[in-house]
Structure formats: C-alpha cells, structure tokens
Image (cartoon, rainbow, N blue to C red):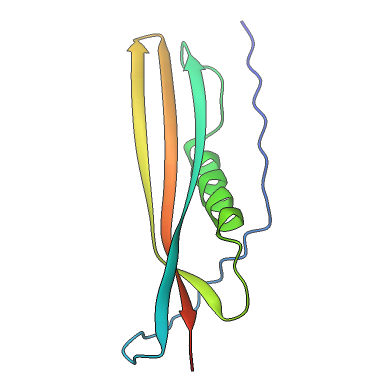
Amino acid sequence: MGSCGVATSYPLSITETKVTLAENNFKIVGKTYGEASATYICGIGGLSKKALKNNAINEMSKNANLTGAQTLTNITTNVSIKMITPLYVQITYTATANIIEFTK
C-alpha cells in the first residue's frame, strides 16, 4: 500500500508585527476564512498537520484580498477530526481572521 501527498504553498503575506490597537485609528472592514483538509486511510496519506495548518492560513490570507493599509488580526485556527471508521480519518484545519484598516 502506498501513499501520495501534495503540498501547495502560497507566499504568506502575514508578517509578525506587534501593533497596539489602543487608539481609535482603525476599523474592522471584514472577515476572512481559509480551509485545508486531508484524508488518511490506515494512517497513510495526506499532509502533515503543520502543512495543513499552513495551507489553511495561506488560503485565508489569499481570500482576504488585502489592500493599502489593511492587515489581519485575531487570527485563529481550529482543527476538526472526523473518524468515519478507525481506518478512515479526515482532518480539516480552518483559519479565520478579522480584516482591519488603519484610518490615520
């Protein structure tokens, strides 16, 4: 029994910049969402959990269509494990974030 896995990655435009949002110089303009799934049969197949998480975040970032002074905040990831039988498992990562835009 063999296994194949394909990993795709988009340039992640999220940089780790620490910004204090204490001033009233931004507004929330929307939300964004990304998802990545893999199926495992007898524990074989799919991608690693780290790759799934990264793919979900990359998809979320791509879906955000950020422009100008916009950035993502409150980024969260969740994992869902669906076990159809002990031999068939599907793992899904979802990533969500708020899109904020600086006004001043």
